[in-house]
Amino acid sequence: YTTLFRSVPAPILYASSGQVNVQVPYEIAGMSGVTMNLQYGTTTASTAFSVVSSETSAFVQGVSYATCNQETVESLLPLALNAGGSVISCGNLASPGTTVTIFLNGLGLAGGHPVTGGISAASGASVVSTSATLSSSNTGSSPASVSVTTNAGEINAVWQAQISIPPSVSGPSLLNLTVNGVPVRDSLVLWLR
Image (cartoon, rainbow, N blue to C red; front, side, top):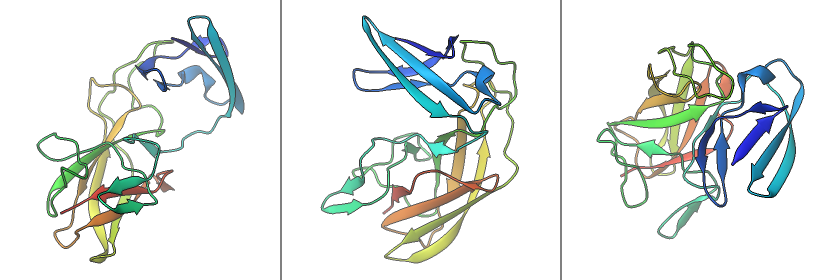
């Protein structure tokens, strides 16, 4: 795979037959629009995008609504880890009173020294303000404690949110997360015991 934004190479974070995740080059900051050109072997595709200063989104497990047993929730299931590091899913529910980690992008740079076409390391920057609420049909709405940081030395512009699940929340819970005054783009759900 080769991915270019205005002839600037984009670092590829993940690629499969149906999906390519890239880090948008730093050089497009301040532009109003940009075209992404993707090449795989002899196949090429181009897509035009508007450029915004930030649009926070979570890394998700799939692009369809979250389903657990017979229940489908009109929200996406984020890539979420429990305190032990295993992925939270329908078969591996998070426990109330624990801390889960979800991964975010679209917050902008996390310090460091970006290099064209390269994945640069983060410097350990932190976010100015965050808020989170978990809402469940079982238990109502509860505020959750959250901190959003980078891991120094990890991929720049990939952030992690540590969310403390209130002990009173159970069942499938909608996560409303705001970072630096901007809501995370997609509606998210966490599967809780």
